Length: 503
Image 1 (tube, rainbow, N blue to C red):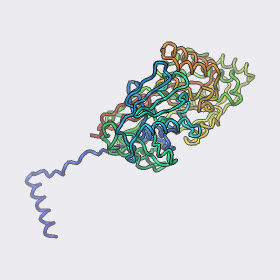
Image 2 (cartoon, one colour):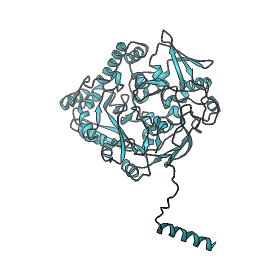
Image 3 (tube, rainbow, N blue to C red):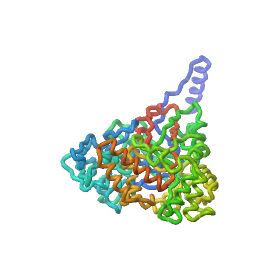
Image 4 (cartoon, rainbow, N blue to C red):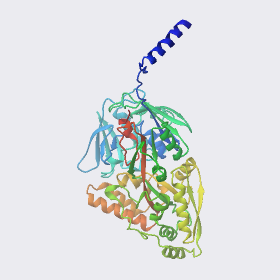
């Protein structure tokens, strides 16, 4: 053994002296993508997911009937095609064949029926229930699934997109294992979740589209975006969604940065069912004391777009169509006088600094501005999980919230601002007028009619200062240079990682 070692050493030395380069065999590039995130997921049931971290991670594991593409177009997903009847009261979906769940069982129309009926069941507390509440029956005919609707509903197609409309296994639903185990049809399989540390996914080799190039995607929880940027620069992380514009400005040429306008929006939610916010003049005073432009300037470093209630591009609200398009302190004080608070008042506001990178900065900007009108914003700082649970229970007076937007106003707000909406408790406001307008907006196939309905909806929300809509942020996806093929989506979804590769 010693003799062989000596011979080997002599051989290497001789080769080096002779100028022969000894090169190790080339290693293939790692196909293991590490995604840095600041927040952990909070559940495994996609139909009840509201946290951005959960939605993004489970969005790679579960599939929906349709998908929203980079151009905000509705594309086939687990439904390969569809058709409405002439009256708009029936939608027939042709279900894609040869799709399998993670456990290897085939995906069938029976799974679609069971998944939709689970969402419609109030006991599920599904986030998308109000969006599809016009479905009165689900029928299977061969590989077709027929949705009969209570009224014409052109918006129902867009409502079928997303994690909250995930298609589940009928077998799993019957067994009661949803939320305990993960079994999707998406491009990646769920491997493990170590709370507070990581979520690991592996490629689904039987994915109905082309199997992903990436072998694994691991979401690693890192406390701050500055630390994530350091990890990106060091190469220990290859991808992240950055929300802090100051951090985004520090991204160097060694990384790839995608700047994407978002459909999501930041708002100061006002709970109109809690005194003194049940007084419309108090809400109007708050609205008129706030300069959205100032919030964007001070809290977002100018990176963001001032918005009204509706961010859907085809139906976007006019930001000047509100009682106070710009801050008007004198008008705010008049509203306070009319409300019976000539000396001002104090209102609590729930904020989770960890929920969004600039959440604290937004809170401080709002606090400073409202103080000028005699309104003291008493900030309640909570962690993300506490925020979500209290938010869902409407256990707040006001809340600084970062909410997701949609390409259709109906799927964006029906669940919030209709009397039967499953998140109406959170919204704190509804009216017969809004109910009628939402019904009109979803039932008409005429774009002009729909635009008018949503314009009137926006006007009622603004004139009653239901919430104070602030801005839509930019989202920055930052990646190592060797990540190729990724396309950012304005919806916030990371689904296009299914086409990405590490070279």
